Picture 1 (cartoon, rainbow, N blue to C red):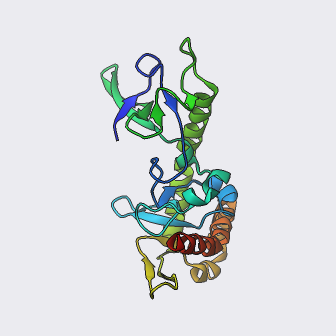
Picture 2: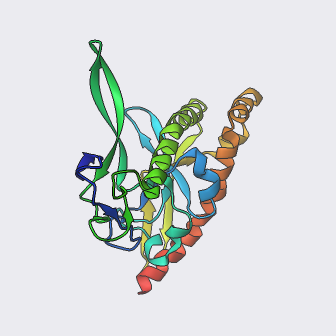
Length: 241
């Protein structure tokens, strides 16, 4: 990646041509998802968690494939029907710089662009800036997406912290039989919510989850798991081609 702070001088003539097909910068098997989009995404992708041990933080992710650089939805065109926010924002990111105000370091957020991403060019796609330097409708949309992600990070952290305090996370133990030359895929490094422990939570703990709106998050994540069957189907189709 090559991140630059976006501005209408250096990047005046850039376009973003997002092509959701293999080899165009979307070849990854996991992408971050956030509470605000659980309802929308749970009918398309299986949702699990990854674990940041250092910060004891569980990030919810949509599973797109079984191997590191495998996005099975690219060839099926299924990705386009429900794009996670973390994919919509590519190649833009929220950056941070520290400036000094009255002798005190203050963190300031800014908008950055990965100019090395294959979607970035000077000919085709969505223009970032208008001819005279104003934001395009596309850039306004990107800003809304990034604001939504930024606003949801705190809710996700609180959700993760509460589930962790109730010891509800468990490592995903899954072996997928693809039925081809006895080929199996062991899914590692992912976590899910322990339904048995959830059922046996004390009433006051359930009440805490309910008041925060986190029970709905849990139900949406649980409802997403059957999408593994669709992912397996897409994998089998790919292996046949």
